[in-house]
Image (tube, rainbow, N blue to C red):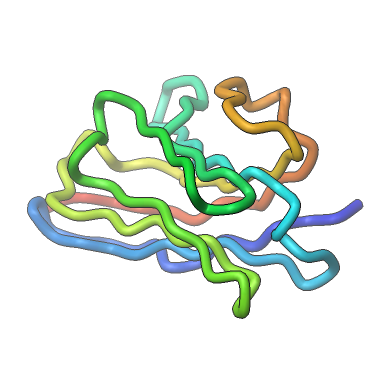
Length: 123
C-alpha cells in the first residue's frame, strides 16, 4: 500500500505560522491531486484544501481561505501547506491524501493517505 508522509506540525501560538509538508518515497506525486484534511478533537475529518497535479489549480475551505496556501515542488516530490494567522480552531491532526481526480472533498474518495501530523494552536 503506497503511503504519504506528513511533517511540520507542532505547537504554535495564535497568530503564528507553520508549514506542513507531504511527501511519498515510493511513488511520484506528479500525477495526483493532493488534498489536505484535518480532524479536530471530537469532530469529523474535514476537507481543508487541494491542489491539482499541475499545481495550476487550488481550492480552499471558507474557514481557511486567505490564511492557508497550498503549493507543490515537483523536484522535491513534496506538497506544502503554508498556514498563517493560525487560530485555536485550527487545532487538529492534518492529513494529506492523493488521488488522480481533482476536486474531491470527501476523504473516502482519495486513494492514498498519510498518518497525519498534529497541529496545536494555543497560548
